[in-house]
Amino acid sequence: MSYTEDITNGASILQQVDVTDIITSLALGIAAAQEKLDDNSIKQLTKLSETEVGDKSLLELGFTPAFYSFDYADVSASISLRMALKKSDEFGAKLSADYKSNADFDKNFFNKLENNKKKETRKEFKSVKDISLKAKVTSNLTLNSDSYNMHQEDGAISKVEHFGENVRTNNQEYRVVKEIEEAKEVVNQSSSGVIIRKSGPYVTVYIPETPTTSFGLLKLDATYPATSSSGITIELSSAVNFKKYGTFNTTFNRAKTANTGTVYGITESGFTTDGATFVKPKVYFGWDLDAFDPLYNEGSVSNATPELALYLKTIKYILQKDPDSKINVKGYTDGSGKKDYNKDLSKRRVEAVKEYIFGKVSDDVSEARIKTALYEGESLATNEDKDETLRYVSIEVISDNDYIFFQGGLIDADDATPNVASTDANKFIVLEDTTAVTPPTIIKFTYGGEEVIIKESAVDETSKLSSKSLIHGFHHEKVGEVSYLLHEESVVTYSVFNSESEELDVTVDGVASADLDKSTTKVFVSDTETSKTRLNTSSKDVDGNRTFAVSGSIDFRTSRQFDMSVEGNAALAARMKSVPAPQEFLDYISQVLTDSNSVS
Image 1: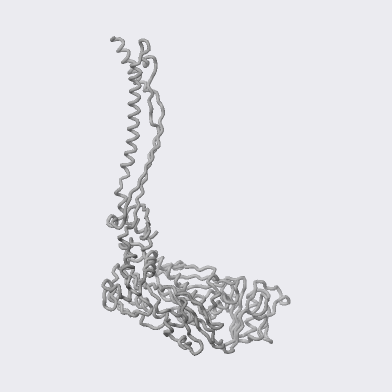
Image 2: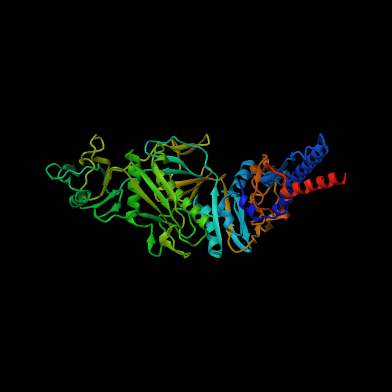
C-alpha cells in the first residue's frame, strides 16, 4: 500500500468520531433494562398483595416477588474509517492524458514514473523532481538558477553520467539518481568468441583480444595429498613442473617458484599473492556515483591496479569454465547520506559491477551464478563523513575448488598439463598464448527483433568500438574490455533529490517547466514532490477500488482527496441473577398489611 505512513501521520479526522456516545448508549441500555426488571417486580408485588386465599393475600401467606440484578455486563464497540482516493485526483492518469499526443512519452512511461514515486528513498528528502528525456535529446536546463547541458557528451556512459556529476559538484545538498529504461531483447548472431548480451539498459559487446603474454588458470580440488610421493604433478611446460600436496599455501608457493612470472591464487578466503595473506579485492566508486570506472582513483583507494584487473579477468574465466562456481557480490556506501537512499545506491553499484562482469562471459552463463547479491548501504559507516574507503563493491568466489592463475614466466599453453581437455579434477581450465586472435568476421545482433550489423561482408565498423561514437542508433563507449551500447531512443529519467529545500525550479531551454508544451516537449519535468504532495499515489493505485484502512487520523485539509465512510458495530453481553427481595422491603410490606388489617 503506497504512502500509508504519510496518510497516517497527517491525522485528525478520527478524532472527530465520538466513540463515547456509543459506549454511553450501551451502558444506558443496561440501566434501562434494570429499571424495567424492577418495575416488573413491583407489579408482581401488587399482584401478590391483591390476590387472596381465604382472608389472606398471597403476600401474607409468604409468597414474595422475584427480583433480578445484573451482576456482569461487557460493552464493546469498534469503528473503522475507510478512505478511497477519488477519481478526480488520478494524478498519473491525468499526466498520461495531458501528454497523449507526445511521441516521446507514452502511458508505460508514466506508469513507470508513478511506480518510482512509491520508493521509500524519496520520502527521506524534502523535495524530489523527475526530469526525463531520450538519450538522443540534448537540452540546456537550469535547476534553481544553475545551468546544465543535458546529453551533450559523447559515449553511452559519459552521456548519462555528466548531468548528475555536475549537479553534485555545484551543490552537495543534491543527490541525482538516473534510471534508464530496460534494453529490448538481444540475440547474439556473431562469430564464435564474440559475446553480445543485454545488460540492464545496455547492450554489452566483448571481443577477445590477443594476449600480450601466455597465461593459464589451474583448478585444484579441495583434496591435498599429505606427501610429495602421493602428490599430483602439474606441468607448466615440458621442462617445468610442481606438485600439489600439503596445503594450498605450500602448493601455491611451489607453483610460484616454478613459474617465476606473475602467479596469484583465489580461494573462498579471497585473493593471494603469497599463499598466506588473503584479501577480497574491491571495486571503488566516487561519491554518490554508481557507474563502474576502472580508472577511478581517490585518496587511498584505486581501481587502476594490476591486481583488480587480473582478479576481474580471473572471475570471468571461473564463471565461464567452471560451472560449479558461484560468486557473492556486496555493495557499500559511506555514511554521508540518507539510510534508504544509501541502501539503494549500494544496490545500483552492485548492478554496475554485475553488468561489467557478465558483459565478458557468454550469454549461456546466467546471473543465477550469483549466489548472493547484498545491498549493505551504510552498514560499515560509523559517522556521516565522506569516506572513499567505504564506497565499494566486494566480489568473492564461492567454490569447492581453489585456483591458481599464471601469467608470463615459464608457462607454455601448448605443453601445460593436465590441459583443458582432461577429465581430471585438477587441471588447467584456461590456457592461452600470444598467438594472434583471429578477428571475428561477423559482429551482429538483433535488438527487439531488428538486426544491427557492426561487421559482416562489406560492412566493417569495428573501429568505432574503440572510441565514443554513434553506431546504428546506439551511443557507444568502451569501459575496460567491455563496449557499452545505449540505444538513442532509450528514455533516461533523472530524479533530483534535495535534502534542504522544497524549492526545485526548472527551466528547459529558457522555458519554465510549467509552461512547456506537453504535446511537443522533448523533456518531461515533473511537479516537485514534497511531503505535502505525497498523498497522490500512482495511477495504478487509483484506477482500482483501492481502499486505505487507516488507524490514527488524517489532516482535514486533505480529506477532500478521499471518499470517506465510517463503519461501526457494537456488542453487548450481560448476565443477570434472581435475588431475594430486600428484607427491609418485606418488613415494610408486612407492616403495611398489618396496619391495614387492624384498621379494617
